[in-house]
Amino acid sequence: MPAVKMSWRPVYRSSKFRNVYGKASSREECYEGVPITRNVHDNHFCAINPKFLAVVTESSGGGSFLVIPIYKTGRVDPHHPKVCGHQGSVLDIKWNPFRDNIIASCSEDCTVRIWEIPDGGLRRNMTEALLIFAGHSRKVGLIEWHPTCSGILFSAGYDGKILLWNLEEGKVVRMIDSHSDVILCMSFNTDGSLLATSCKDKKLRIMDARSGRVLQEADCKQHRVGRVVFLGNMKRVLTTGVSQWNTRQVALWDQEDLSVPISEEEIDGLSGLLFPFYDADTHMLYLAGKGDGNIRYYEVSPEKPYLQYLMEFSSPAPQKGLGVMPKRGMDVGECEVFRFYKLVTMKGLVEPISMIVPRRAEKFQDDIYPMTAGAEPALTAEEWLSGINRGPILISLKENYKPPNPSGPKSAKRERRALAMKGLDLLENVSPKTDNEFLRMFYRQQDELKRLQKELSDKDERIRQLELELHNLKNVTH
Image (cartoon, rainbow, N blue to C red; front, side, top):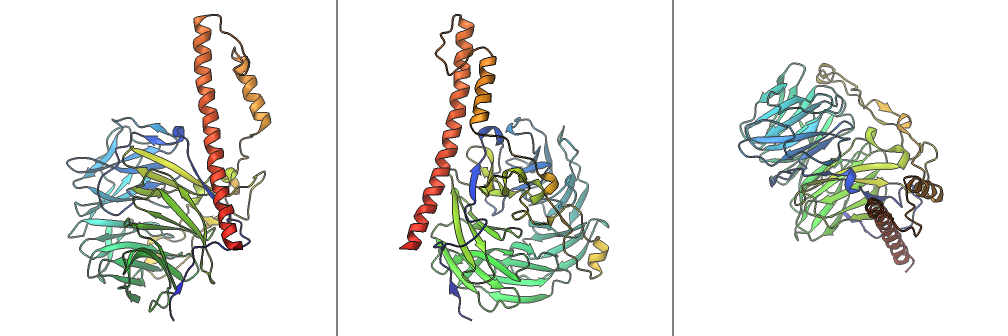
């Protein structure tokens, strides 16, 4: 079947997510002073869950990463304790999807380590790991937790091998030796029965996750695959890579037939690796390039045009990597459907970016928050290894709903009244009589100016988004 070219041009469709926009957090809600690693390995170097933010840091004489409680925003102490047990640079970190205090890391020292972070975060450097796995002969570049089973971790090394670790027994239980070169990416389907991989040998593989038996294989000479992701229950996988003309490209494949892609689309001519993020709850795909400042997002459908371009979030600062908050950590009251944590190495900054559906959430919006994967495993390691497959245990996010903060004229009046009660009304022409009153008025005016500038910036961003949408609609009509 010949590949179909996918058009980026938006077509008017009835969709709940057509007007989703990205909102960068204020400076007070960011994490500043983070010594982000300068390692050039193609990975995200951060991991997020509702309790903690973990970031791989620049260090000498071994590898380390920071673990910060998610609520402790602002400037990070330069002497903040680190997890620093590895003898080589840390290349990947992943939180256990079912235990928020357990994190796995892999390193150039050829080991995989499991750490238990105490509630409230670290008070001193952590050097003793809960478990240490040594089975690779070369550095370990990737780790992935099984999506529905507790206690199963996959690791991929530069030796071309994938090892399955059983944490309950503390040993390796399988070795997958189907790759002839370095493995670039691993992705599970929804129930964890299938594993898709991309490899430096220019091949895309879909295999049985237990046995490692290759079920489908594609020789991607025209589309050099960099990253691969399963698209939920659609029985499709999406890859990002480079075309034969060295342009960045995405391709859509039938997971049961990799002989030829269903469709392909060229994105741009930039050189940074393109990271795909798929949200199975909203059927939205996000594309973010390493070194780019923008995030494109699309709506995925099982029929043509397959990928429907929605909009683009832009910012001037380039991203080294992006972490993603699990759905159970979303701000449901603000209609937040996805949240990135963007690493900006030059500024030592971790910036949360929320993807928001613009609507008034006076009650829980169940149409944009379907049942989603929770924090309870569906299987034990023993059950999964015996051949049982089971989808994730789903939960409702309704319990997380809190009404949004009131805004508008009433809140503005309350703010003005509160300022007046503190001594001076900033909006009236009152001359200070003493030096103390002058200083108080000066600092309050500075605070008010910052608040108004922030409001103006938010409104300017919304205007730009609406102008882009209007421009796109005009293109359609012409």
